[in-house]
Length: 134
Image (cartoon, rainbow, N blue to C red; front, side, top):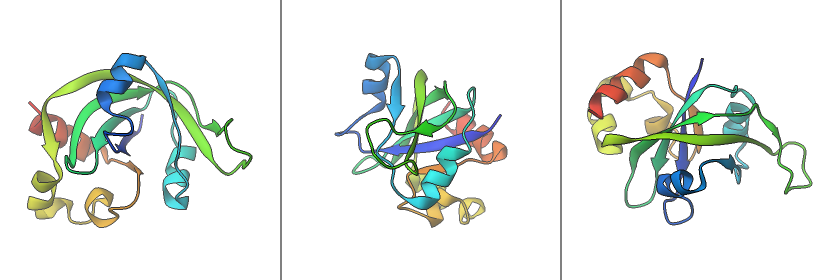
């Protein structure tokens, strides 16, 4: 199993929207580095949902419920998507400021590649962020 972090602008699509919808197609990604991540997701992987914009925090957890596939709304086979369902909202959001305050995470893509919208989370970091959210 792999772990991921998915960035979304909450005014466009929030974790609460995912809960309301019960599942969604994670689409709208055109960045090559993020598309590489999308092509590496597997059904059953877990993902943090991270709100960008003014919030800048991990707010919930979803489960990837499909492998990657070509975006059916686009006429470009390079644009990949996957399906995701919500698992639960975090008890306490984990903020970007918290992550940045620990030098251990200085090379983590959330800190280093701010514009990347889909990124892999090392299992060790996943567990640490889960503890931070309790």
